Length: 349
Ligand code: 1HN
Image (tube, rainbow, N blue to C red; front, side, top):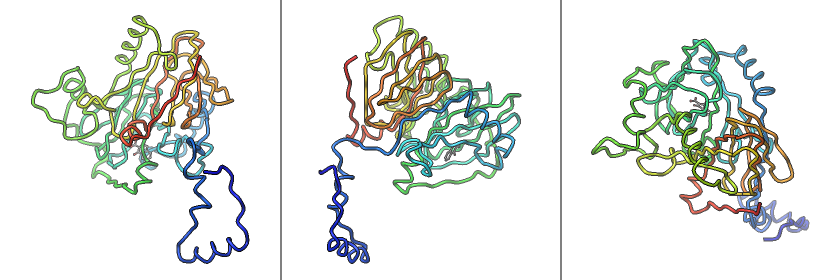
C-alpha cells in the first residue's frame, strides 16, 4: 500500500504492452490507488448558490424547452471533481427540476429511486402510483423504485424541487430498467393524503404486510418535521456535531425511506458552532432556513436558504449557524450500512 507510483522500466512497460493485448494488466501498478488507507474520492466540496446563480439559469431553461419535451427539465448539479459523470457523489445524482404553470412531466417508472426536496412554489403535485401529493417548500417526497410517477403544475407559479436519485449506483450495478406510461398523467386512483393517513400517523393498517422495501408514505410534510425539531430543541441539548438531527424513516421497518438513499433533517440553534465530523457517506445538504457556514477541509462555504452544498466522503467538516438554521441532507448511508462499510469519526469542538 505504497502511496506513490514508480514509473515502470521500459522492460516492464514492454511486458504490460504485451499482456495488454490479451486483456491482462498488472495489479501491482494499480493496487495503491484501489486499496487506500482511507477514502480518496475525486469528488470535491462545492456549493451552488440558488437565488443568484442556479435560479436564473433554471428560469432560462424554462424558456428553452418544455417539461414535456425534456421529459424532465432538470439542471444537473454536477460535482466539479466528477465532470461528465452526471453525479454529485460517486453514488448519487442531484439536480433541480422546474415545472412551469400548466406543464406536465409525463409518467414513467424506472429502477432508480428518487427523492424530491421542495425548494420553491406551492401546490404543484407529484403523482406516485395513482396518488397525488401536493408539494410545499421543505416537504420530502419519495418515488420508490419501479413506481409510476408524473409531475404537474396546476398553479400560477413555477415549482422547483431538488431531485436526488441513486442513478450512479444503479449504473455501477448495470441494473437500469425504465418504461414510459401510455398516458402523460396517471389516472388518480387514491385521494391526496391517503397514504399519509394509512401509514404516516404512527399507525399501520391492521393485518397489512409490506410488499416493498421502500416506505409506503410518499410525502413527509415540512410542517411536521419542523415541529418535531422545534420541540427537540426546547427539550434537550444538541448533539455536538449535528445539533438536533432526525432521519426520515420507513414506518414499516424503521429503516430509511428508500433502501439506497438515507435522508435527514437537522436544526442548528442560533450561534451554534458544531464540532468537526466526518463519515464515509458523501452528503448533499440543502439549506431550508437560516444563514451560516460550513467549513469543509480548508474551505468555508457561506450559505443561506435554498443553497445546496456537498460534503464528499471522509471530509472533515463543521457547521456554524448565525441564526437558527434548518438543513436537509441525503446520502447513500443505508447502502454502506447494509454492506458493513459505513464509518464516522467525531472531532473535538
Ligand atoms: C427522473 O426520472 C426524474 O422522474 C428526475 O422526475 C430526475 C434524473 C436522472 C434520471 C431520471 C423524475 C432524474 C430522473
